[in-house]
Length: 298
Image (tube, rainbow, N blue to C red; front, side, top):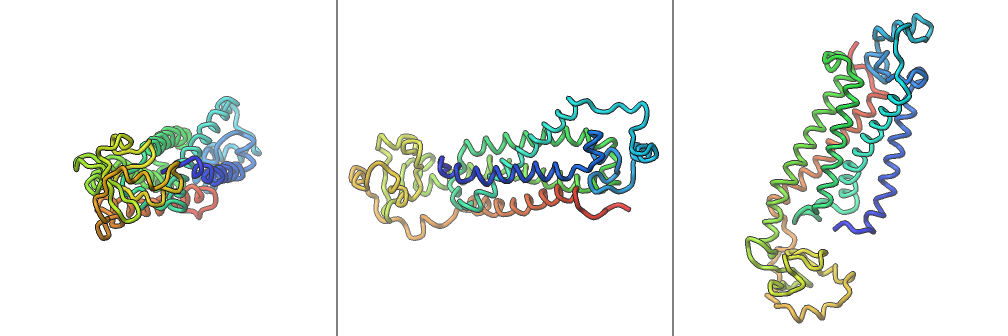
């Protein structure tokens, strides 16, 4: 469960990632791009990693680094708008990718093997939509023609990045719909509530049945603990001790290995979660490549 304490521990990491992303973007802006307000791709076919000059770039060079007559420079409003869109794109990436990385570093995917929290799923989809919208705008402003996507280094790397992003979105869709429902159903049949009709949880090796307890309505105890889980460690944060369990029916010992073995949907979820780390690394590499990568097109 995500608590205020876990969020507080994650904030410094997310803030650092956002600051590094913004600073790195600012440092990658060459002198002429900064002076004219144009993106590197306006004058270079390969964007930030230079490469052959575009027609505008050749005119700019021949005019001793002065924009040609008749060229309309972007207004301050346009420059600020593009900067804001880029900032929001970074925010969406930091929130989405940062949450995934945080789960692997501090929580581990196995912790969510019985179902994903709905608030976190909503936050993830908000970030995905934000990245998709802002990424589309940035691409429209950056790419003048479709052939740039396969004739320039920027375009080739962009297509790789887009393909990986699309894969991440498809995985997110599968996990938050089909896989998450199946994980919850498996957890319910292992002692939770729902199709199996019983509200059960484990404590100190004993399985308890709280189906008739008023404090376990809907299989959730005070919006904090879910049925089908082992609550032995959770008692330390509870306002009561284990003596309250005398009011609940003790079914018997927890089945051997029942509390530790992952269901098939949970195993798929864990595997996809680690695969996401590889995909995120590829996306970050693509973003870095635009600033310092080797030429892909001669």
